[in-house]
Image 1 (cartoon, helix red, strand yellow):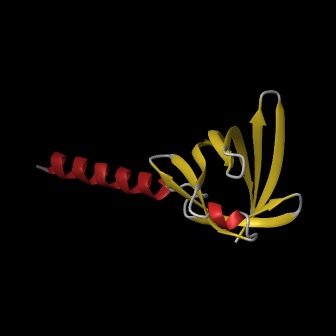
Image 2 (cartoon, rainbow, N blue to C red):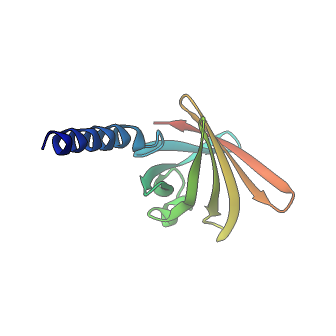
Length: 127
């Protein structure tokens, strides 16, 4: 009986420790997006089963408002050390998806979208 109790406590302790470290730093965060230095919109990033998704929740331009509610980041995964890869980012105005990577440094999220050998970068600021 003592062995069972010790084992159950050990498993419970490990499970709780794992849950404490499971939440990604990007989970449930909100970001001001910028394009060519101008604020464009706000994206909320959430995490489910180790996969990050970003949804446009507001836009600063009348043209951008039609895309509010669209998911623009999909399948982004943490590599560790604030680095992320494996995802895609959508340009809602063009309806095109691009491979992406991201790097979190404090309150700045640096994103890079790729099409073939070419890339384009943006920096978003945490709200």
